[in-house]
Image 1 (cartoon, one colour):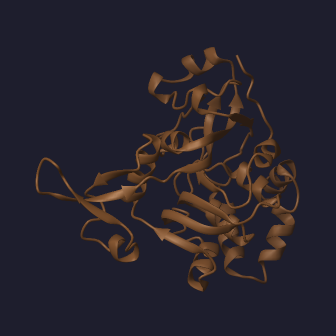
Image 2: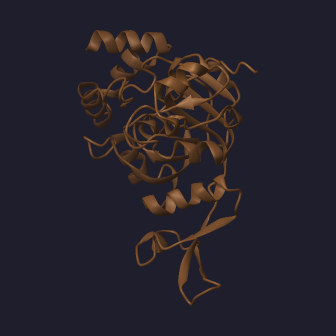
Length: 282
């Protein structure tokens, strides 16, 4: 069987300027932050990012990596708004496609099923159509009901973070929710998984119920072992959100005079340097 273990830098080396990149997780929950930080250290630019957004979006926006954002929301959960996203959104520095959560999920589902679109009732009667005048409706061939036709959110690559994986790419979540990560994987030409720990395949089977085995090796092109790689978002049950650090990030992101100091302390080095700085902060 193929060994798919990689480093974060190996993953970034397979990405390219101008691509469409899906980022799994949900708000400030189980985001592949170590891979996001690796992108920050790279020269990648002009990305179309597709995300139920959290600090992944904020950090990439802070470094000017995003050209276009497709999103259902951007939030830090316990901190309602990401300051960097607010800044670039209000300034018009990035292009946006703004869906609600249901429309966003339908677009991912269409891409995962290799369909050009899927019909849904989500978004009808809302401002989704006003903000996205290019969306079309279709009539059901079985009734006279009008439905929203959501185009597929096709991804060049996706990044997700799961609790456990084996070297072949089988991957498992152990927390309360899969957060649509399987759709991000299936909607992409290539999927890269960061994980808290790479284990033997037998340990995946014994470590949780069968439904927790979210991704199979056929869907995964690379696996990166990154302990605390979702920090400062959650990776339950391994750890919760680092609320003190998240508040520190949000305060620095709001103040452009403070931001360079945050970057210098936490984002100017490699992942090991980041984790050491976080430990010192704590």
